[in-house]
Image 1: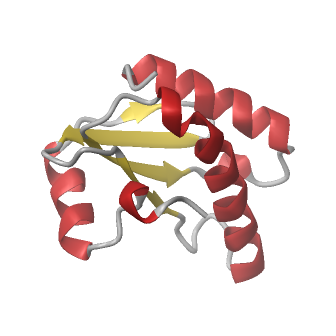
Image 2: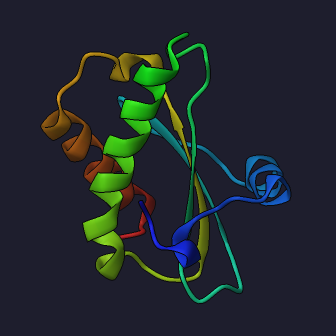
Length: 112
């Protein structure tokens, strides 16, 4: 799990990011980010029921994504609110494929 300061949890924060940010696409994710007055960069994950009807599958994706982000936190630029939306293409992909895609997306967005 991500540290408390690195989590986006309020519905108002998600709505603000969704409304103001321009999306950046990768194979498995859509990233939206806005600058923030916060010291840390906060991440929020959105995994729709369209990705999988099974909560077990959605939770597995959520855990994997958080585990990929956690060791990257020290090198991620501070002061952003980031929303990661998961695409259906992530189903049945292994951890390394997801990790490579997410790292490339973070570099592409300028967070690393």
